[in-house]
Length: 366
Ligand SMILES: Nc1nc2c(ncn2[C@@H]2O[C@H](COP(=O)(O)OP(=O)(O)O)[C@@H](O)[C@H]2O)c(=O)[nH]1
Ligand SMILES: [Mg+2]
Image 1 (cartoon, helix red, strand yellow):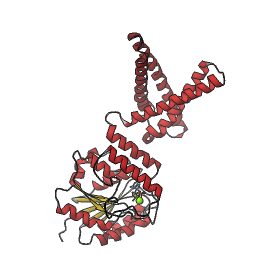
Image 2: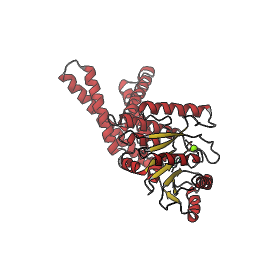
Image 3: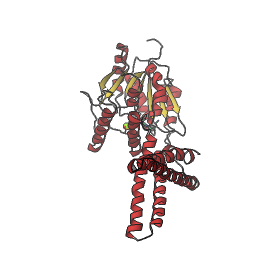
Image 4: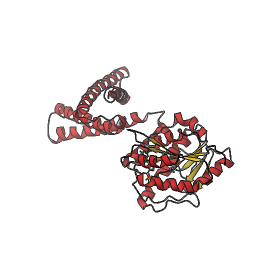
């Protein structure tokens, strides 16, 4: 056996302390005869996963640890790990023992035997693969996400949501600047960012049940996944943030009409009072929703930031409303009678104004 490094195994971890020694022992067994290194990419897990990995790394030089501080994200963890090796091939495997490490030698052999192949992908949905002991709910959600991704970005994989694969590092490094890295399933990201169809082979594996620790897949991850799919498909036409901002704006109009109806029609308040309260309610609602969703990465926190943000958002939106009415009135005079087009143009100008300025002044300062 030569001394040249053949293969890196990247293991993203968050609170997987108990699984670390077991995984290393299993890799050691599965990869006998291969020159490999393991790179744990840990997001500063509170349970001390990074320390557990370092304890092993002191004894076993094949093991390395990247500990990221103040960062979270499975996709970026995988990317950084993959860029941190000198090996020509790199695999990504979950740190919770759910992926079958005994498939790694077959992936390695496939890539070594066929230089034209870019990537070997573990699949739960080819003959011999399986999802193990998943409950019906998880099977249904996974099937939905798989079908959706196949529709939106047809990369031809049977299991595009798989997080278990081996790729040539040169191919990965070439595309690295284009990877989205947002909570997106990293494999899909790789397949979609290559700039050409990657040549792949699929190898079956059975997804194992988690024995220690718990899954980090939650609603936030699911939402980020949907956002990332949108971004890949339509992001260049309408940026995802603007789309979210506008969708929330539409809900705001609903709130406005609801409050106005309640005050003016039901309670008999004056139209002006109804309009003022409805506008304030809609702007406040939009502010909080945009803060939680559209700008969740720059979210304002604490009462001081929130108050500043809310005031600047209201100011921006008030000017936006004036611009909206002004543009609509101008177009209406200019092309007499084209009221619907004039109104829509006003709404569009108002929306772009609100978006551009609030992104700068409300969510751009901290
Ligand atoms: N570095 C890092 N690893 C993560 C993060 N979220 C999940 N992981 C790891 O990614 C792997 C798969 O996550 P898991 O929650 O088991 O997903 P599931 O198997 O789809 O339920 C595990 O090794 C996790 O510890 C994260 O934010 N950062
Ligand atoms: Mg898991």
